Image 1 (cartoon, rainbow, N blue to C red):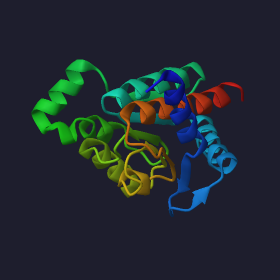
Image 2: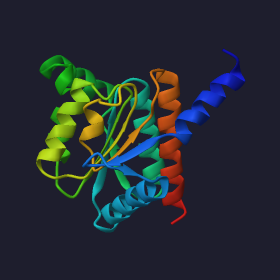
Image 3: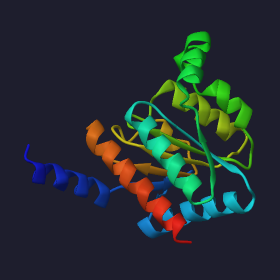
Image 4: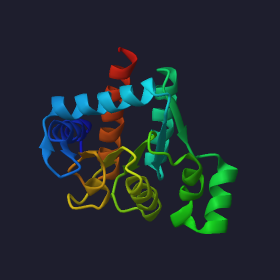
Length: 186
């Protein structure tokens, strides 16, 4: 595949990103992004924290978002300290790798941002279901199968219709940069 074709695939995916609410109803781009900005602003005004999780490339995106949010004056945390992540995985199993830390930050007023290309990662889903149990706001970013479980959990869900990790991850990064840039300009 030539580079121009790759860019066109990314553009096509971003042009057709599906944004849904907690009922699975499609939202327009403007409505979806405006609701997300509203969630972040409400969180900031109440001095709450954004918790961001993802695996692999999504972990790198999560860490980047943490950096951008903190630069915008929004409290944010991700659980990627190598000693913490490896100890949690070893002691409690990888499906609990984030859950042990999340339990310490789990609070109704905080926000969870869950990023998973497949939307089926057990460790991501465990934390997300735990957040949902206490009615903590959740924003999800997923791809691959349109019926993935993560996509059905969040208050706002961004779905990229692609089976390519690269295209899904680049699209998630672009969406999150757009959100963080809007937050910086508020």
